[in-house]
Image (cartoon, rainbow, N blue to C red; front, side):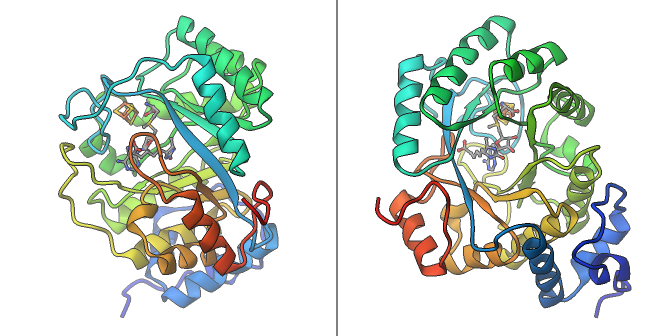
Length: 335
Ligand code: SAM
Ligand code: DTB
Ligand code: SF4
């Protein structure tokens, strides 16, 4: 039996309830304590009020600069501090990126997300990245970048170059954060997000679960995301990919139903956001992914690589979508 009283306001409000930015950790913790079926039902109501529940958006990732990152993120295979045996790579030439974008579009992807293992880009690196944005746009894809911290001026330059989304995650709750990263603060992250919003670009911001955090930390992360001045248009919920050599390699796996619950509560708190079932899908059964879609996830990474680790191949995803009757605007019936 749960010791925490049911949250009437969170579960009983109508699907057209106003979008809120004033959630408390206590309210969200109470949501986590509710029976699974109640949380899923509510998430589905909210999902159906804002989206076609059978439609999923798909994005393809490419690591444009790999490894030797000075930051100490304990989950990340690209930190220079951990010995993960990664093949390092300098910033990719524009034609390599253009080819990868073209292939992604031909496979049915809608958005091309480029990630760089930087703490923060230098202005001359922004010049190079702008060429990449232009090439990906020419291939007819939406664009997304994740380069680390940005100044207001850099965000403005990226928006002027036509960048659609900037990804910058909060990763976990403010309380657990210092266990995971010491080389940049939560406040640093909030400031970069502010620069992205001020520039007029769309924000992609979420976190990672399964890093040994508590349920309160998962609630705390979701509250931080939902109480941003605007909800991120895209909210990636990553399940930790445990990479040998990183300090989190041997952390205990999260209960899959707790992951699904986290997706459902992200959907309830951020009704109009794309909730992305992100990293970790290779470790999930088809049934678990189906539950995540029922819980309100409506975007995924598509293509057999994330940044440096694996992701289900496109044939497996097409087959799963077919079995579930899910469609995506980018994916036609035939490959
Ligand atoms: N270096 C930039 C930064 O951290 O802002 C951009 C690239 S970084 C790899 C992008 C995001 O990938 C991180 O914020 C983290 O949420 C996610 N990520 C990295 N390693 C992961 C892992 N092993 N499992 C799940 N997500 C991971
Ligand atoms: C996000 O939230 N997840 C993606 C994307 N944004 C950049 C990255 C996942 C990385 C997983 C580990 C790897 O492949 O290196
Ligand atoms: Fe560097 Fe980003 Fe990895 Fe942290 S998550 S080590 S900042 S690449």
